[in-house]
Length: 434
Image: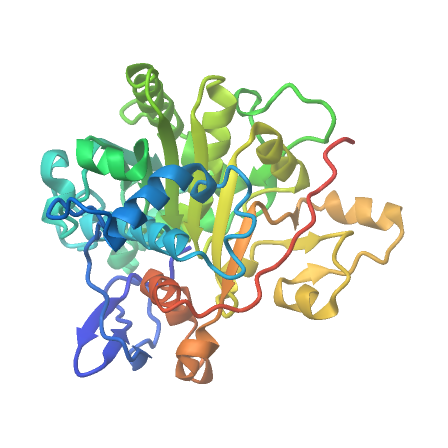
């Protein structure tokens, strides 16, 4: 559901310029907006590791802080006490994972006239370096592809040739931290699964298949204390569809994670799944699949940016029961985070909060609520939320009604980088006992 990939125009101030090139749809997005007085963010992962000092410097203390608290930053305590106010080390980790998502966008071939359209621009061995993300300490070990069930009608290929898209497209990668110094800094070996957002017309069609559908049996736990977990139809299709020539994204993930877990079973390990927009939704679904499939899985965390809703209340319960940690970075002015469907929460009484999250009032008879849930449009928010606002940093974006800019990944990273935040939503845990 990514509205635009966005380009950066550099001048005396930091400017975000939304173009039609990566949109592939006719939208009048052609204005520049000032995002920050601090200058453009550099596409580089920084490290506080400093070999030049033998005494305990500020950098050394930062290294020790991350090494000793990494499980907290991965959500082992549901990020309690870290979001309000936002812990500075956690903020840096969020930015670090956001840059892995930026890399997924930079590696994707958006040129529809190119014979390599919808593939990865760079070889796996040098992918991160080639796209400008060097010295991360991570090595890409697997390319990821997603396959769409729905295809554009044949007549559109002649009438609208720019809407043509392959059935299977490169959507991200798996990278493993293999640098000993970075492993020491992080306190464990980290595995990153990174997903880009929507880029092809076929993916857009899958996005609009927004009714809920049941999780397949191989993605469900045996817990019978809650109803059938359900997720968005198009999302599940992208994750599980295979062809005679293309392995499903699900099978690729399971195969690769199985190898990684076996190979590094004797050392501290974490799996961090990150993505933007459609990629954020895929990240949540992937985490659910990994924790369900692998009983010996290490700590599995999601750091998502601008993601749409994924599943229903029972899906959320399954995530919580499996110990999956989900941190959603949300821009209050981004409409993509408020779709699809609607949410019913019995535990939300504050009217202002209900309005900002598109939560339906639940002062209704139980039979009516049941009827609404049967429509397969009742979703549930998952995990912990860090809510930011474009209005505080770049109100001109809101004044101009530029929805695409509010959703852009670079806007999210600017908001986190400059720590412009509104009070994040405090959600009570759903009762999963039945």
